[in-house]
Amino acid sequence: MSIRPIKQIVQAQPTMEGAGVRLRRAFGFGNTDDFDPFLLLDDFRNENPEDYLAGFPWHPHRGIETITYVLAGTVNHGDSLGNTGTLGAGDVQWMTAGSGILHQEMPRGNQQGQMHGFQLWANLPSSLKMTTPRYQDILSKDIPEVTDDDGTKVRVICGDFWGKSGPVDGIAADPRYLDVSVPPGQRKTLPVETDRHGFAYVFGGAGTFRDASDPMAVKTENVGDGPETITYEAGNRSLVLFGRGDEVTVQAGEEGIRFLLVSGRPIEEPVAWQGPIVMNTDEELRQAYHELHDGSFIKHP
Image (cartoon, rainbow, N blue to C red; front, top):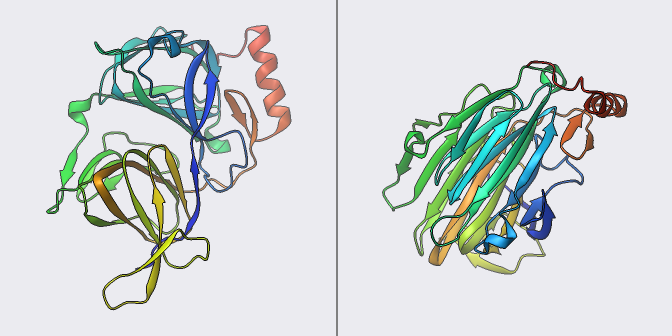
């Protein structure tokens, strides 16, 4: 077994999207190679309704999948195909935009005014860029959760983990999307497929992620009788980008740690990206926006 090296730890940066939603962006709109097949991760955690109620009014998507995971509050959604609904706490929507869809997402807080969730964008390979749009709306009760002997809990949204299979299926990049909670003081090693890019995003508590060797590490430690190892500290809103390997090891702090652990098989295709549309070539991108303006964007009504 080989521990994945830690390539980078960064803090999610404040930004504004939609009609004026204040959120934190962990990554996106830059070099996509390290995260391929993923393009963007936004953390829309907020307790001030003025910062999120304007929402994300009607906008297009083509060539990607958008994954919305709600932890507190609700998100009302609707689209150009006539679909409407509401995502509640613990629910997931995996939308495959494919050939094109217009939709809106309007966050609404809970009784305390809290709104918390994430949106992840995943790329589609060229062979599926123009596929028929589809939704997978998953209720919280249908997401399996497995608890290990040390109290570590994992919600399995997509992929297989510890004998459980997530309810989201048929995704091109064969991703794994986990919500991991490690109790205070516990050290946990989690498998991640070697051939996949992977990252963790911390949103509760804090801890340290172990690395094999790196002179930029914040501290060192000895693990048993083995060689000296290196760990990186990661707190709230920290994004941990891993290199190649087949496992990650985390040591939870005094309050425990909760994080998303996401991995997927790289698509390794050219990316032409402007706003909510992601294609393979600039010509395809220009064509998409031309169709958006002349009314022919929707291919599968």
